[in-house]
Image 1 (cartoon, one colour):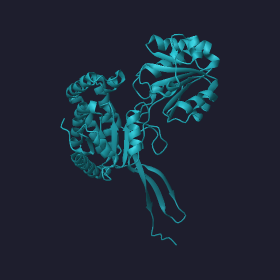
Image 2 (cartoon, one colour):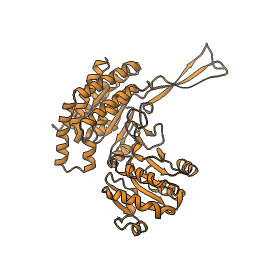
Image 3 (cartoon, one colour):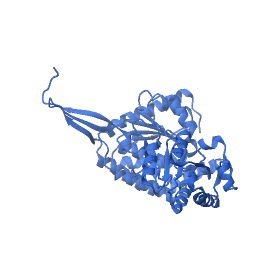
Length: 425
């Protein structure tokens, strides 16, 4: 690919920003029916272009392997017929969602007769910077569109071909529905300077940045962005097995939470077991993990019971492995589990397994994470599983959007005030 000069990268990105801003103005007035029609057409185009998408992806994956990409990275970047169909289904699910724009969030009438409404509005132009997963091209573009926003997408260099093939399907769907193709744009170059340009806001064109990728990407975005950021930090997720946990449930849920897909942000990285049930629960869970190829990194106390484990270091408790590895410790009850999670976790997703409702309520209230579960796998940390159709990412901050970022989280609001000639004394 031709290397562009700094000036040409700036000009290219500025033009993308201007076109996105113009498209956002048109989208703000689009009806829910028109946006849904575009999404349904996009799904049809994804299916029709499946072979083209898979061919482009095969080239990307071959390059990743040649460059020595990790298995978890390859898993996230690989498409197959089932995953392409999942992209199409997600587009249809988003199309079926209620239009989030124009929702009356609150309304009241003042003593002077003024009628006030708080109404959902689009954010404007959203910049999404992501790595590896080409399906994010469709998910992010579709969610932004349904919320009335234009999207500027910057994918990882390893998945550019796949993302461009998917974008062609999205553009065709926009044309079918009579919406501007510039509503969803993909940065067409691999030059890293394009990211820096997006972080400046493209001369006021970008209203918010959403990073979806590794720790270094998110750190750069948070350090350099001159526009608001919906941060998606690493997923250091925990499963806590309480003394009142059902043993079969504890085994099944922990295995699923860790091993269903190890490369996703909702994969459990640490297992905490109440010391009160170490004799009954610990070994069955660790054996089930070990038999499925999971490496156990554990405290000396756990290793004394399960010698196949390797010693855990201090760094293990705050490591997102994205691999078949889990760190394991015994704790003295739910308060010690909460303390461990608050010390080492990333405020992403954490789960408690227990039959004691009071203990579960204490955990759900005490763990300050975006998603907290009771008797369920951490792998449910997904906008699709929440009924949102898809997600742009899991926001771990506390401002505006938290947890799965779907269509509702991609809106802002304004106040509509109706009077009958009132003046302020």
